[in-house]
Length: 419
Image (tube, rainbow, N blue to C red):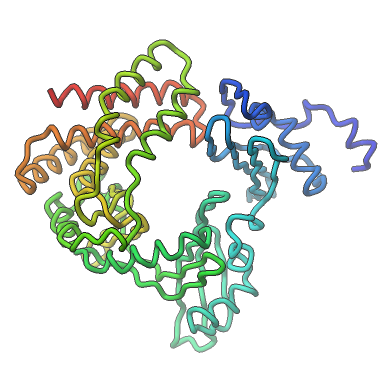
């Protein structure tokens, strides 16, 4: 396509951005709404990376990271149909108040300096030799998940020339380098739990890259849906060994409960516009504010515990595959967070009866374990649901406002159960 032809491209030639998302304007970020204008987004992509030979069939908004008045980042996937395959190009546009826009695409992420090397087979081979002490004949790299500026998960499949040596599959976590020490400290604490923990096979601190072996199994969430999950007591027994560790504030990153509360309140206060939603938000935040402001860590805890973080291996072991947040926290909040996810799945997911039944059994087992009444648990569950209520807009759901309002209503319902 010539420059003259590029200049004559009609906006109608560019596919609409999916899903269509409506947000209020932001005086601190005057260009915010451009992030959801397909013509502007595609023009920005082409200005930075050149014009592809053909327009994509779809441009999809994937994730939205947003602090009103301060920063917004949207990640996108441009998709092309290639015979039977769909090829995508993931990129992100970041706006920070008072600064020029920043545009980048996978795997060149300024916040994840190790991603480009870990995501390329040739350089990944060298990294494996240096940090994992493995020198396979060849390596295949697969992208599993990518959230710009935050994290990526890759799969490194190493294959040796001798058939008897077989292959090695590693999951590779890529993060901002400053978070590596936090993950290493959390992994050390996790080893004291009753869960099977994948060991750290290699750590490249400067690049923010960590290698761990693949753990076979099925998630507890999937097993709950099928009615085949281990009983809640098995989860509590495994967590109890973590909770019983001596609390040392300097060991592990403490949970910032008040910061999470204030961030979510600020976000939803700006985004929600209907009287019903704003009233629900006010009721929920008024009920939770004192708890959030006065809460203090009481023990070592997981701090992000829910059913999709665990696997049951083929030999029946409970494995914990995400443990980065382990540190000073609140055991009852671990239970409440999982209960909140189960209640959310019962409300918005498939198999509501299965999730709700498991939640009730978990609650009963937890109250017996801690020997307390339900008020403290309900208060923490309402907090966790309040935090989950920001998820629909962060995930750019088309009906985010409706789902967020329903989430706040769910938190309000839990709070009413405490009286």
